[in-house]
Length: 265
Ligand code: NAP
Image (cartoon, rainbow, N blue to C red; front, side):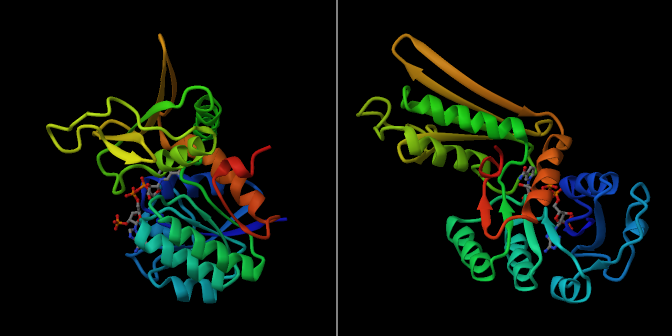
């Protein structure tokens, strides 16, 4: 069976990589793209390297209404990504969302929508399999080493901070960690922000620099020891196996799953 796919964000770094992956996967067929430019043009006119003749729509509603598709991949920005995903669900097109920065309320709203339609969907703040393992290992370690800080590093064009992966890591750690106030009880920041963001008494530090892609280190501290769990995405290909896997899985789901770890064995 061929899975027919619409992609939003085809000119982006992730979007163009995803289109290449879809082109190379024989069970996938790219049907159309949603972009905020180039309405009515063909994808091959805006990206000679990709050379696929599919239409571009600036209006996602028109795209979902006129193009028959099974899955919708969003790799844009949180504001448009949320609207696109809601619309795709309304048109019974299964969303696979890589766009990061959705609030937990937005995720809940999308879960309710898919549930009412018994439609599959996946939102994953990180599609790199290694990053998913890093989060799972962190969750295991937090049971025994509850003093923990997360350092995430990304390229300087990233719009949201902290990263969706860091937030997700903190949520997973919360499931096994006994909540405690870390550090000295009288600790004071002499420069605001020095200790990072506070999530359930865990600190998250966000670094943004050119040259970086997506990196995270979770550091645990215990008496006389530290444990560092680290993952580096060196380029955007690292996310494509996860997106490919999610597109295939989403066809057999009847609800929206948040986090790639929840569809891995
Ligand atoms: P990017 O290179 O900036 O690409 C984003 C694309 O979205 C751009 O082409 C942008 O167009 C387009 N866009 C913006 N608003 C739009 C709208 N209203 N309608 C349609 N397209 C719109 O960013 P990226 O590195 O590819 O990342 C894309 C998203 O994926 C981000 O949210 C990022 O955090 C996330 N991400 C997720 C993972 C994961 O594993 N889940 C990994 C890496 C990145 P313009 O150029 O005109 O602005």
